[in-house]
Image (cartoon, rainbow, N blue to C red; front, side, top):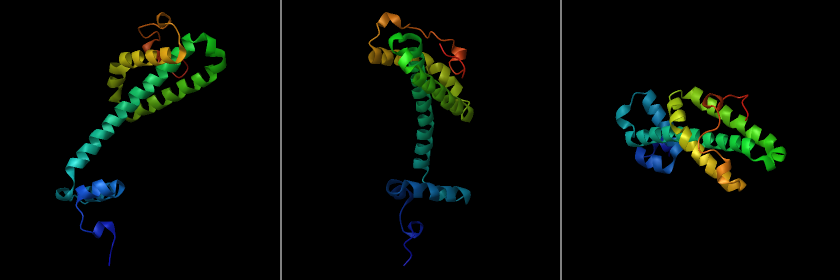
Length: 156
């Protein structure tokens, strides 16, 4: 008896719920074979949409972390000597990852610039929570030149 999952009587929708990787493999084979009427289009669309949202979420999260560490480096004087090496490493890694994201998906550049103010506000709140710095010490507006935020060599 042949028990390979491709040969069992299971719908694409059931396969999606039971074995996601196998569903992907089978869907790819169906697309390559141009067997479009057997494809589970609802879940294909859902996965593509989710993939796009994931990229956008990653960009925003990395931007918040980058801005958080730029703020720490620029304003948290009592911890700077002890932590600046780690902060600089985090800054460079977040920049590297952001640049890779933007290289792979240039359309995310618009999201980068559209999100930067909100991401800065979020990073500012995180820094205030983590550092107990006075609220008036951290600027309400981004204190770093926008063109330098992704500049690998820029440090405040």
